[in-house]
Image 1 (cartoon, protein in one colour):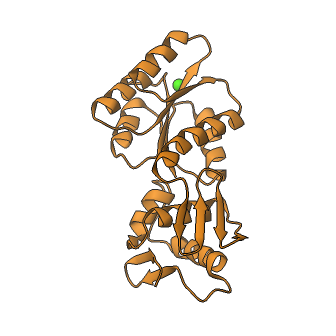
Image 2 (image 1 turned 30 degrees about the horizontal axis):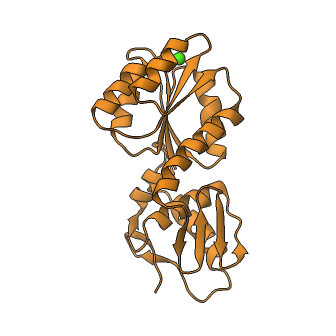
Amino acid sequence: MRILLVEDEKKVSSFIKKGLAEEGYAVDLASDGQTGLEMGLDGVHDLIILDINLPGKDGLTVLRELRKKKVTTPVLLLTVRTAIEEKVIGLDTGADDYLTKPFAFQELLARVRALLRRQTDAEAPLLKIADLTLDPARRLVFRGEEKIELTTKEFALLDYFMRNPDRVLTRTMIADHVWDYDFDPMTNVIDVYVNYLRKKIESGRESKLIHTVRGVGYVLKVE
Ligand code: CA
């Protein structure tokens, strides 16, 4: 899951980015409205966290322009305590939820999960291939009856594979969906994580699920 954070206050943005990264989300940061709009128009994010008070283009203008250009990515607005009117305008403009500053990180995380769940629930409640099951809402993975413990990054990687079965995923595609803009897909980090994941989901089993496509990337499939 990849999140775009548009926030100009460095203290707030680094606090949010660090917390979300620890939960396994890839986070891209924009520190002004124009940059946020351009990154939001890419359409690669699963969620946008958008501050209203931004230099240059304010958050509501960014939201309006995103919706005008048919970007349907869920948006969580960050507002300040007194601005009740902003919240109403924000929801009218097409925000999916809002959070009032200052907030506890756990509250932000709950909102983020709820918004992402709303999306995934509608599309695919449980992801399955062979006897491997991934429950996106409860963040659980099973092979048969056996529960498999994954780190947040391994989970994000498997989630992406399971949403694209039988499709060859290049390192660039994987980097785009599971890591953020600062990530260099030329390093071997992706291969290292794929191997961690393989060990956990394939250990002691005869049937392999993640196959290497030499020189290209990986594919999740049943042979
Ligand atoms: Ca601000």
